[in-house]
Image 1: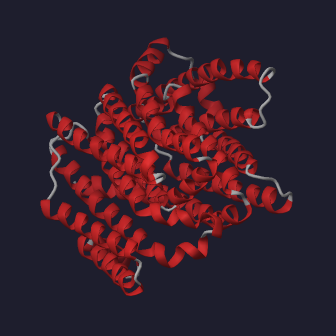
Image 2: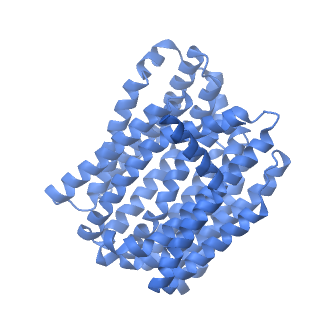
Image 3: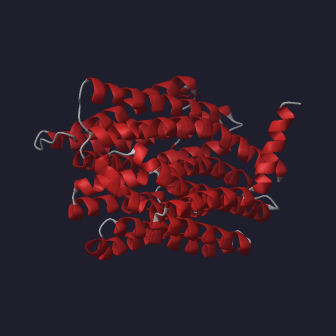
Length: 468
């Protein structure tokens, strides 16, 4: 187990290096967005970005995920890798063309300012997603991380140039997104030697069917994720206005700190789960990972809530100050999504994509129903509450559903401590008393050290060894 945990930590660390840098740059841009862009413009573009990011995997029928999973099995066979890569490209671009061509025809009749930018961004995102999953599937996590850094630098530099120098509006964010994904794709095409694989193999019709069989059940899953993430923004924009969605988008920026780390960990965890799904001590290994995930991410969430009162006004412009109210509940939703991701990786490892789709669709329906029922009465609170409820429901369902295949166990004391820590710091956050906020920050730091003391001790010992 120690070697598997070491590999998981190593892969996570490599991927994290690129993501931390990118996330830092993203937060560097937040004061620029909230001071120079109107809430309504930022809200509209945030909605469009959500549609692009979440529709791209649906249009391509999640071929990038099938590519990743099939490449894991083909890592030791160069020719098999080549067949998977070439087949995945053919599948992806065939489906992209079936979506883009009708949209281009429609563009002659529908004159909309953002249409061409959306199409270019969508193709760029789909291409980079595929190449990034090829990097992961072939074990090139370092190249994945470098590509993420390149993408982040391109996004920030182009936004600074367009917004500050050329005084573009919110469309700068769309342009920067497209450019960043194009440059990321070009880097990976050469770094991964994609032309070499194209020359090495032909597409395989049997493999094509197997990959589609694996990926098509993930489409409802992709749609459900779209429903959870985009439905909140759509409901808010339609009922409360795009300015309100701008506030909501800023509120989600801070929980996105946790989401970024979650995304990194989930990539490494999915790989480890797929490799070790048939090991004899699988249940023990998986339970250990799930327990440590609960401790680490609950600590991170509580620390973010405790830090918000001291940094929010420094980072965020005056027009977006209302976002402060919604951050703790939004963080709760992200924390529940952390646990959902643990179980998702196990479904993927066992190639049970139909179960992933079913549970995700159920969660999405709950999210929309709760959001629509509450938005008229409590406004933006409905969006963050509905997401938290949806992810909590999915976590509970998947935990018990997976018991038929994998038995994951938690210590009750870890769950109780996480709930008490979160509730206490959140109450102090909303009370807003300075002494209480300081107490909340101290409590958050104390909680993080206590529940993660074994992990911190191991990391400290390894660092000290480096200096001996």
